[in-house]
Image (cartoon, rainbow, N blue to C red; front, side):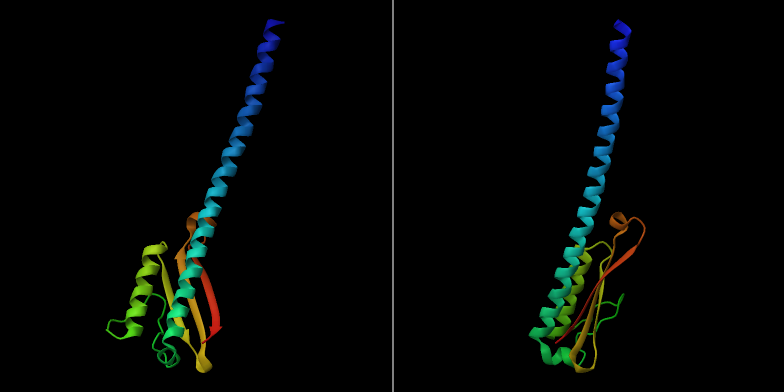
Length: 137
């Protein structure tokens, strides 16, 4: 009888351990997904920040003054568009891992803004995640 009680305790400890390991896995998955969502939120804010800057300087934006390709450095200069692009590029680099962005203004004021960053921690293999905004000035 004394050994049977010890066996029950050992089985209870094994079951409890498996449950706690499952809980730890859920917490790790939750943390990973939460961080990925945080980065997507930052990308959204940065895209709309660029759009607000363009709307504040609409005439220059309509003629392509804010156009920027992925991987390209922000243009230097002292005009408002160059300053805006430099600040936006710096914010991308400082806020998101491997943050990059592009802005393209087509005919009629149609704007496409792409914010790209490395989200391998959140997606588990997809290196470049993108947030794309299509709108009109």
